[in-house]
Image (tube, rainbow, N blue to C red; front, side, top):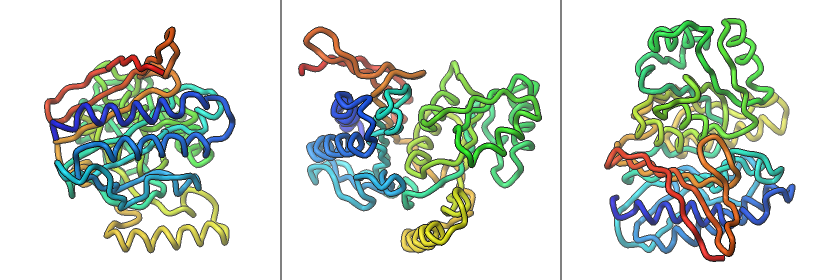
Length: 323
């Protein structure tokens, strides 16, 4: 795994660099396609035997590194890969902040193997470890987290996504006096911000993509935080319509084929069964963690967050690239 640290950094850099010229173009699927192609090409030059165990694209009907795809040179460590070539394709398309090219690696057989579907997520930093239980109501979890952190509820900071499906949770937290930060997209970034030392948030609670959930779990584990997650079918996350019922039926079939369960709560060790984790996120547009890709004279500068669970290090790395 040590041999993959710098190659992983280069993979997310290449995806970010491929998407960068199209910031603001308005076409999120075109942006995703550029990042996917760049990431796949970079992955196939890495000395590893990689398998995509949870990939990106099916929910958004976009190109993807598909689940089960074999990547790498075919020599070197055997690894599971969780990938989101661009977390926040809509943000890149609209020129908004906090879009990342992101992926995580772990030894083969240690990452949750699941379809690209909706996942409910609850994340806390090291101070709240052991205090969460996704089977309990959100209000009870918030009280337990506040007690673990030694904070009144009025000082607790909750990150979530600003989506219709989250409005009930936002209202519930607000009634308790909790400070709510409703983000347009980007729950990987919010998970990292929850678990870093100078954390911007105390807790993340949202329903978003499962690939982002598994990638987040890698960062959460390496940073010493805690997380629980639950796969939920499309009708729970959206509307109960004939087309959505068909999507939910397909999701349940794929879950059976992959040996995972809908509406089962998975703990952090079930999401990521190893501490030998590598996580890399390169900023595409500027944000709370990283600066985006930017021109610097005849060069292009990128900034990448590299979390190494093997060495227990967390670094932000600036790189210059020839155009």
